[in-house]
Length: 192
Image (cartoon, rainbow, N blue to C red; front, side, top):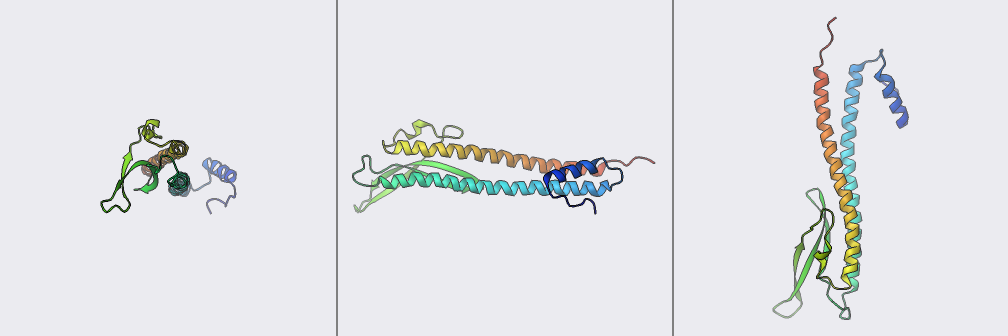
């Protein structure tokens, strides 16, 4: 067997250090094992990043639900500034986590029963956060809850951007690993 089964990270690290300098060792097999484990690690890391994004989506949805709970609590005729015009949405689109705000306009339908709602997407002006002027049309009761929710969204957007950066690094390392494997296979054996 190439290496006995170490149990801890430190034992694994120590074993790789030990075999790196070992003279009586099948380094061809060791090289293949190291490349395979590097590739498995990077693929596993990529899947872990997907899981982390799913957890971030869940947390962003909790922020959105918090906003909507306040919005629903103000849906009475007694609420000054009824109805609330702002809304937010959290979704995954093509593998990307998105948190958006929009502004609703209510128009009475022709038969007089109810309103039609027209939503206008609000553009995010800053990198990870909507600017305060984006919510200038908010009612007095809406503004604090929008700010509170958007502060949480900003944190999630930064964390999500970090995950995207890590994903790029994983892809880059997978590509470099392929190049390293090709290079190792092309090494010339010494003349004897």
